[in-house]
Amino acid sequence: MRLFYSNFTNKVDRKGRVSLPAPFRTVITTAGHKEVVVYKHSKLGCLIGATPSFFEDLEARIDTAHGQDSDEYMALANISFAQSKLISFDPDEGRMVLPEDLRGKAGISDAAVFVGFGKTFQIWEPAAWAAQERLLEERARALDSGLKPVGRGEAS
Image (cartoon, rainbow, N blue to C red; front, side, top):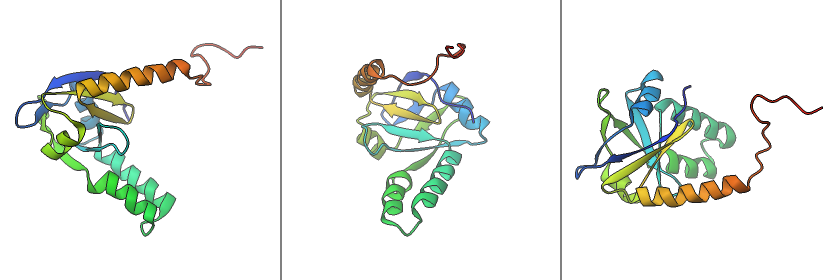
């Protein structure tokens, strides 16, 4: 699976139309989809977008971990599936309509920041994204990732 990278700020019109960034459309269409699934993040003030196949995998992981009759499955399925929207986009220009309820949950009005997050992407109100980005940069500076530097061998 190709991943979502970078970030893009696009205008949102009065009807909620916004252009899905071209690199994001490429990831989605390369995976064989013409739609994107969008839902409100359970902890952050943003929306999450992903391919429908990502959501199929997510459902399988939730079911395997908890079983469909469990309280955990019900809670996770409600957040991930019941409150999500399958949104079509124009394949040429990427125009899509972010539903009013989702825009309201994320505080998005006249602009949206699309942020690549690997297998998913986030959609933020610009000022909220700026604050989140500062927080993430602070955390990253304080973090020792434990990853080896790329291109270097182990010390002997």
